[in-house]
Length: 117
Image (tube, rainbow, N blue to C red):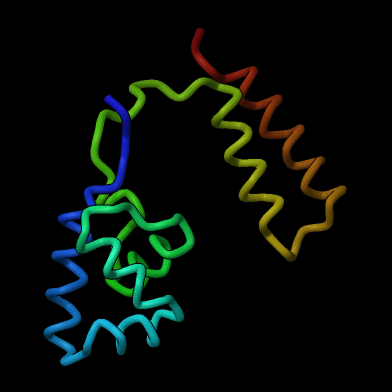
């Protein structure tokens, strides 16, 4: 089964918080820096683009995974684990590229040494 956003649940959560804060859909769009048409599309059952989805989940105060349905992969291949760590390192503005490379090599070596076959 393919993983995708549960648009109905997302729309319901947005609507509930929007009502609690006495916001119109346009007011919510303005607060999030989105076009109000994003919410019209949600009401029609269409999925938001990823950037809009990020804004919405942050406003709701929930993790990105909250509205994602479908089966998760059961196992993360080792190369994906190290790649994910490397991506986080590259995103850290306090690290120089050479430092990122050095830490990535250390992580890879440790992973290779300690990972179970």
